[in-house]
Image 1 (cartoon, helix red, strand yellow):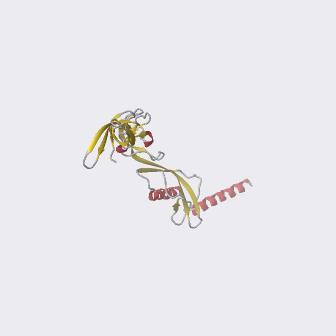
Image 2: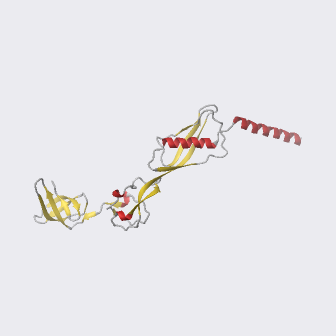
Image 3: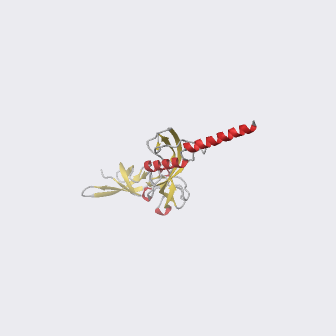
Length: 232
């Protein structure tokens, strides 16, 4: 009785293996290739990017698809971070699954080559360009020196810090109580007179100035330290 049972199990095992071999399974590698190709065709990110596919469960068995597999997404576009890509077979024994990919993006961005203290003015000597992963950064990092030069930092920053516009402000070129030159330029003449700043001001800002001669309060535009302009 035991021999017959063993024979029956052996025959069934051989039959099952043969049936699986005849049917054929979709290889996980072929699914990964379809996903990679779909991402490459539909991604639109600046700089370089890197794709890491999450492996499928090794126990997953899907019937071999007769026609080419179709990849798709439910969103409008593929973004950096975790992306979900669907893959489906539309013929024969139809099936569909979702795969996950981690997409990292890299750009050449501005970082600090040297540490700076709170209130310090950024100069070109403070800066460097390095390739960094920006997948998880806010979009206020900068890629050009000109955007951060001559800006004032709002807190202490260490060497290697990625510069963010959140940590930078326009420096105060004029402070309340400073003596300034008021410049008025017309089409055929210009006048300069002394004044006292009644408030702090950054470049391009309009501030209140007291004319030292008349005592009159006027609005003037900050040009540089010690100089404001009235052209209207």
